[in-house]
Image (cartoon, rainbow over all chains, first blue to last red; front, side, top):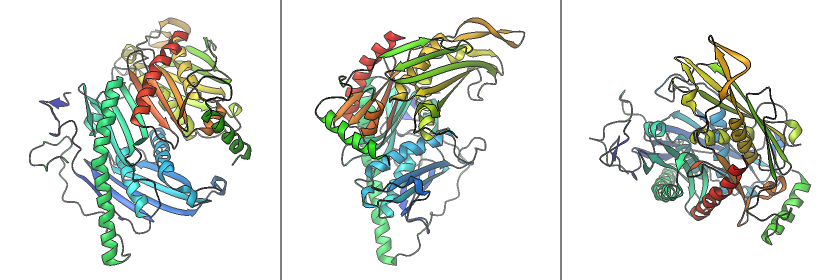
Length: 268
Length: 256
């Protein structure tokens, strides 16, 4: 399957373009201390944060800092393929672990000893790059919960398709590409906090993928900040009014990805 | 919260800041490594690796089964890891921990990406392929389980024999030749302690580390990466560790 034709990808993007839509909204749930919803390509992902709160079970308590926990999960109806299974599996357990480690880095957990901070990421619809989209939303949800952090971490994937390094793969590029590298990047410190990779790459290709990922992360981070600012304006106007909820959908077309480029808004 | 661990951690961090390791190794040295192929003759392939005091056994069993729907003409590779409760006071019996799942999946990713096991050669007939079960047993945990497990897995793959297949049945105890191998993949794991990068961290060094990165290589390519723990790596740190992994990876491959 050709993934790049005349320098353009299946959905008309260049190698460095991010998918559209890429939209983040903060404060979408009522009960959670913080929440966010992200639509990124055909990904639709909710993130929620509870805490700092009492740490249960008590044997998990750390007397010096808050325990940060993360659950990444995918709904059984998330893919265009067959019905998935509910509940954790090996893939989701690994992803939960690496995302948890990202937030252990940025949350100022020492300020909340003996407590727990729970991060929940639910992938409602999946289209490749769910872990980086999920953690991008979770970073916004943590900020929305007012939890002090060193940085709002941005997620972005890079990799190799048809012999070329590119960023932000959709499902087809994920499945039929040669290499996939999800990243979480703290732009303030210049550190890579989540880094996984499969496929076969040379050192130069890895260097190029990292550089492109940093560029992409800047765009993602801008949207995270924008979502948080919009949330503050909302709070100013309505007080701590109920969260706006997930915006209603325009009637979804049954069209499956990849969609044709024409008639779509410009890639971000 | 283990008080002794906290005290030890400070001691080790101070030592490393002065350019020394507790066992006086250089920062880019492995501990002594031994590989014993064919340690378990009942398995189709096996190997036991000692890396210092860390001890990992890998056994491979082969069976026939149905292929995955999206790869109908390829064999199946399944990797699992057991952190035996006897290996460390921190391992408990029960369902697999996130740590053991990560260990198995990172070893699997390296083998799979590098085509260490030639999966197309495991096709038998439509709807019937060879399944390769790679089981990682951590027997004794003194740090860097990942490199020991990946090395043991690669050694076991090299040691693996194909069972004889006759009249639609597997003939146990008789073999039809070696398993077909593609590239030889090994991993190099580094612990970041302050600004120091330590190859092959020991158990105590792992307690003191800020971050961990595992880089799997073949002679020419990086075939898997996994960053672990809360700390981060800069772009330049990653690239210099990629160089080190190619160099040290060749040393490991020479031992196989």
